[in-house]
Image 1 (cartoon, one colour):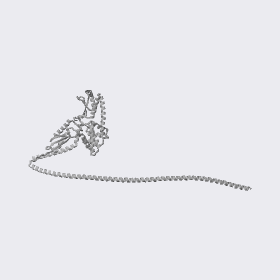
Image 2 (tube, rainbow, N blue to C red):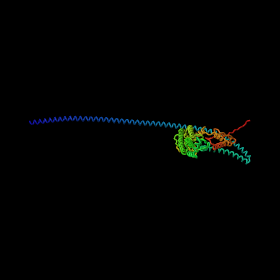
Image 3 (cartoon, rainbow, N blue to C red):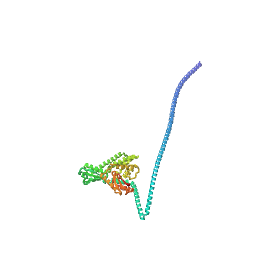
Length: 532
């Protein structure tokens, strides 16, 4: 009984354990299933994420690869395009070089053609010269034959002469031939000297006239001021002339007071100082207060006003001539030319006219009209200070312009050489010389009184008539030319040239005149015969 109970308990225990084990197994299976499910879900999610990451990385790599492929393709296209552009440029450059070579070949051919034409012209001219020389040689041979016959006759005559008679004939021939040769040599020497010294001598004469206030320029150097009353004239003079002395000292002019009622004259070759003195007198007369202190105040005020007007005149002239880049000192000097005249011609207006004439001449010759206009405008700038500086106005003007910034060789040479003081180095100097002569010599440019005009014509004819062998002389073209007729029996060709040179020399040394005077000497031979 006890044994059965024990077995039963063992069996029960075993069954309970089995149940427990089964429960444990079930629970373990359940837990394991859950764990497996959980682990499996995580693995799936992780696999999914990894797949997505792989897909994303693949897409990114694919995009990067695509971009690399695209960039490589673009680089290849750019490289090919650059190569094509380079090839096109090389082809264009080759075409341009070919065109240049073709053009150079054409120009060379044209030059050669011009050279051939010129050579043909020279050959034609040489043929003409040879024909002329042949004719001249034939004439010389004829003349030589005539001289040979003449010498033979002379030898025959000499053979019948005594020694003394032959010597006299020989000396007479030597004297005649020597005189002709000396006249010819003298004419050649004088002609060469006149080419170099003619313009210089005229410039010296003109400069002397401009710088010396003689009777011919009285109207330019004396200016009269009207005085309302003798009482005012006395106040202007001052006690013992002290007011006048102060005015003369401050302005550098001469005050001329005579018995002429209501007039005081101001004399000065410097027209600027003359203008300052004249305006000062006018202001003093209008004001009525006249004493040394007041004179000093008015002179200073007028000097400032005149100085401003000078700058204004120069500026307006430069604008009218369209001249730019001038130094203020040059503008001031050009303004001073407003107060200068030559035979009634205003120098500033003359300078403007020369500038425009020079431009027109230069344009016609294919040169730079702007440079010619600038050179013509500045050519007489030396006249603004030639009464203050030693020397002629061309040299003074050239030095002044160079010192104040004028760098153009064409302009400087035209200023210094427009009266042939220095050799011309550019084509603009003779252009300015021609324009200067045109402006000075044109009708109406300069004036002189009728009495002086008639006196000059008579003096011109008298000088010509005083020469040997001269039969008649006529002043024509308003005194710009004198025509002289000589006796053909008393003067040969060489003597005729000597007479013309002698007349021109005396005219330059004894007369004053604007521009130039042409001397024309005529020698006429008339042969008359009567047929019966």
